[in-house]
Length: 470
Image 1 (cartoon, rainbow, N blue to C red):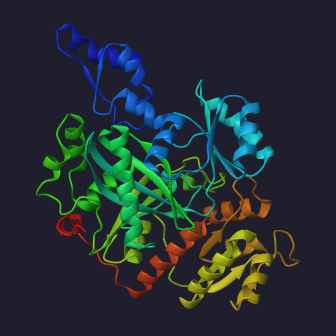
Image 2 (cartoon, rainbow, N blue to C red):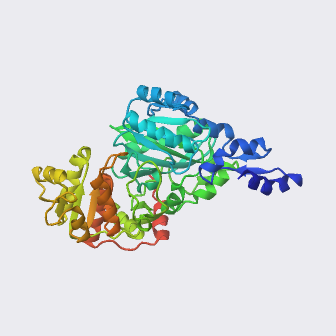
Image 3 (tube, helix red, strand yellow):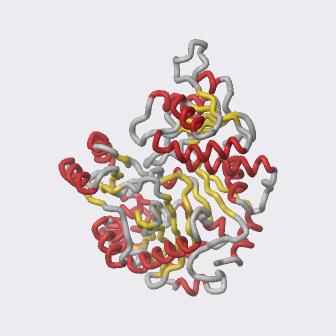
């Protein structure tokens, strides 16, 4: 990257001109090059290297949040395994271990024990180069949010607050997200938007910024800040109709935010469309790699994303799933195989599918739990434990079920769990590995059953939203 950059910019300097570099539209890689860019004599446009370091350095960023009186998960940095062990004992498990300055969550792991920690440390150091590892207290079952906006260093404007569908622990690139958030009161959305504005201004952002937050037990925590455009920005621009790329670049070049948005938006906090929902759903390559376990986690596995828009959240989800190549059933059977900690929430989802007319199947432990709770569930024998061969694999191969809900631990997968997921993939059966994802699928299926999913031109959708700012 360095030689290519010099090849492009040196001719400009040789002609007596100033060579400027904007580091905000190429993901994490340009931020990693900030020091090299300045050391090579080029000037950085938009967010300065000092501001980039403030957002990327965990200690500096934590001190900023403390000054702003904003909560964040307990964290530590470490360069050796001994430091990692000591930090983990201080923070307490579960812990999210992640390298710094990496793309797509590479090397990130959720650790529930010191044994997990040793494995995670080895894998993380392979991709972290000379940078330290980050250790964060993992917010179990929290709901995550992406907040995107633009800032001129003095004032910030929030373009949108997007709610992740999957629980915390799934990489943001692999999680579906919904605009506007629909599972919490608007007052919480306002609170997060105001926090994001304060952080962007205090950090000295100029141009794009993205901040990730989570809510657990009704408390808002800031997870990280990215002084650059995020992968959610193109989705947000299409959903709102705002020229966010242009505005972000112009703010990075020195224009003031109020002049950019004046007369084009109503209000200055966040975008809450009142006439519909926009949903972003990731696209995975699992159909081409059917021997791979399609479980989701902190490391990104998606290779693209699609968008669905509709007056209802269920309709938008249905359209997005269809665009992603997932054929959701409107009748048939649903197989549940969920870990103990998910059984109570899985029960609610099973009830939803039962109300929609689906036959419920389950692995022995899950089936027993559902039946005791009043959901009629047909038990399926574990692999190789039925004299007639009518076990899990048989149920999947013979198309007795048309959708699979399977959850497992973050690091340790039971044999049957892996086999269920691979068999679902091989037989082209829609698979959901989080309870929240299965819940959203039930909403989409309900919209499909009602038959009220109709095409909407994105130009019409966005033009209506632009005039309805809250």
